[in-house]
Every structure is written in structure tokens, then in C-alpha cells.
Amino acid sequence: EAQRRAGPMARNEEKAQAMLNRFVVAKRDANRVDMTKRPYLASECEDVSHCEVYRGQILKELSKKVSLIQNEGLDEHRVRDLNDAINKLIREKGHWERQIKKLGGADHFRTAPRLFEDDAEEVVPGRGYRYFGAAKKLPGVRELFRKRAPEREKRTRFEMMKGIDADYYGYRDDDDGVLEELERAAEEGSLQQAREDWEARKAARLAAGEPADEEESDGEGDGEEARRAERFQEALPDREAIERAILEKRKREMLAMLGGGDAGGAPKHKEEGSINLVPKSW
Image (cartoon, rainbow, N blue to C red; front, side, top):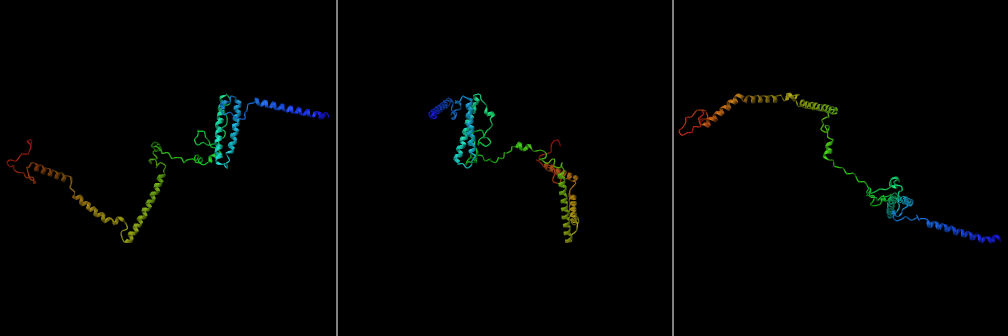
């Protein structure tokens, strides 16, 4: 009976204790800052520890989304939404890191490792928007990352002339001795070919009944040319004959100009009324 009487009392005490516990928890939660929802602007938070908490939340969300975007089986619109969300989180993380530095906290721009940058690619480096995982293989994005063939740059005249030296013009080709050996081999081959051609022509002349040597067959022609040259030399006047001919020609021209003689050089008597063309000094 004592236990039966103590039963309701014990239950009332338990209820009171439970209500007290709930009150204490509610009061503690009411005095605690709600960290589940991040402020819209990082500048609204003035506590460094709270900023660190919000930055940690962003890192967790980034890690989850980057892992999810690696799945190439996702739909195209889903991949694009994930890539946009990742870029938005990266920008938000930068805002919180700047706020932490502004409040005197750690400089995460310098000390923190560069997360997710090995997998990301940018179309224009430094512009901010990046593509992760399967987003790099989306239609229209794949062509942006396709490397173009490097264009051949046209060299200037200075660059072309910079490498020209004596070797370019062949001034030192004989110094190494290679060209000399090649020329010797080529000369021996040319001589051997000429010898074989001469032997072939000689055999052909013998078969036709002609002299064996080319000098013998050409002897008559050479003698005729020598006689013709000798007659030509005999027909040419010497220097004295040329001077005499020039002197006689000048005398005839002078006499014809003065009217004092004919072509044969005989003097003529002056006719009346003729003009004396001989100078007074004569």
C-alpha cells in the first residue's frame, strides 16, 4: 500500500523534473546564437569565432557538391546547377575569409591550402568562373578547353640574319676534310667514266676501219687550219706599212682641201680668181 501511494508521487516528480529539464534546455537555446543559418552578408557578423564556423560550413558544402559533380551520369541541367552553386560557394567563402582577416583573425588567403583548384579549370584565367568535374565535358564547354595548334610566328629579318656566319656562305667547308674526300671520290668516278667512254669510242673506230687515236684522225684538219692561219698572217701588213698608208692618205686629204693637187699628188697652177687657202704663216 505504501508503494501504491508512492507511485503517483514518483511520477509527478519525474514529470516535474522533465519539465525543468526542458525549461533549462529552452532557456539555454534561447540565449545561444543560432548558427544553423548564415547571415546574408559576411559584414553583419562581428565575431571571429562565428565567422570561422560559417566558413567551415561552406567548406563542407563545397566538398559535398564537388564530389557529387564528378558523376558524369548526371543530367546536363543538374551538372550546370551544381557548377553554379560551387562557384557561388567559392565566392562566399572568399567574403568570409576577408571578414575574418578584417576582424583580426587568421589570413586564410595566405595560410589555407588551395582547395578544389586541381580539378577546376578556367576559360579565362583570373576571371573567377570555374568548371568542375563533369561540367568540363558539357556541350559548348568542351570546345573552350580544346587547345589550339600554336601559330607559327613569322621571323623578322634581324632574327633570320642573326644566325648567318661564315659557314652559311661555305667559307669553311674545306676545314673538316669531308668535302675533300667527297670531291676525290667524285673525281675518280668521273675519270673512270671518261676512260670507259674513250675505250668504247676507240673500239667503235677500230670496228669502222678508222685510226685508233683521235689525234691521227684529226691531223689533216689541223694541218689545213694551220696553213690557213699562216696565209692570214702573211696577208696582214706590218706596222711600217700601215704608217706609210696613213701618211699618204693624210697627204691626199690635205692637198684635196687646199686645191693644190689631184689625187696623184701633182701640183696644179692657180687659176685667176681662185682663192688662196694657204695660211700666211706658210
